[in-house]
Length: 270
Image 1 (tube, helix red, strand yellow):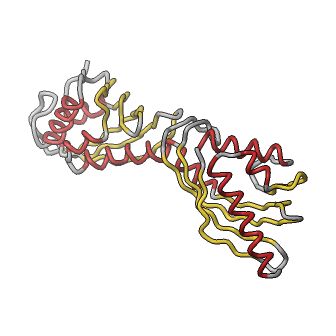
Image 2 (spheres, rainbow, N blue to C red):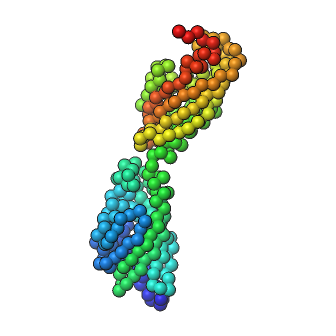
Image 3 (tube, rainbow, N blue to C red):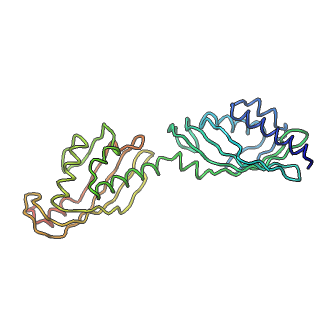
């Protein structure tokens, strides 16, 4: 491949990237051969029209932009590119509804030119990395784990950043109207039972919920449920569902083994 040919294929790619970033589908079409073939695992692209449909979808769903990080011409007339892709999650992508999040992933491509146009492309995208950024599961898991850590470390005020202003707690054992009331209940339980939380399992439940199974371990060191401190070791379990919006807990449902705890403390049960 001559130096001139190398320069020409690099110019051709620059035209493609400029058109891609501008969302100019006709500009993209202008650099592709009519019989353009795309090889891209995970995408069903059979020709130039379906490729352009994919580009259109990437713009509508992600407002995609590409930045060439490296372009290496090969002796056989092909061009290898390493590209950073960025965007904003504006529409349904990979089955995930819009979140408005900024995303970034990478792709490595091989382009083959023929008669001054791109005739073929091979691509490998970091779709797993992109999927992780689009999914709410990882973000929601992180927030719920942070809640557990803050409770264990008695950082009650740190919970303010993890809960939304409209937070609602659904717990048959008590009535809670606000996060401040919940923090008061947690503190009172800490003072009386000196407990720590062990996170047994987390499960996704719909796009906006996380199910938490936890075990509490503590010691009865102050009056609780009307019983004077016994110094006994106690443990009980709880199954909790957290609903999150934009990375904040806005609602919670709790089913705790309160009866089992009361029995350990010697509370008379009906």
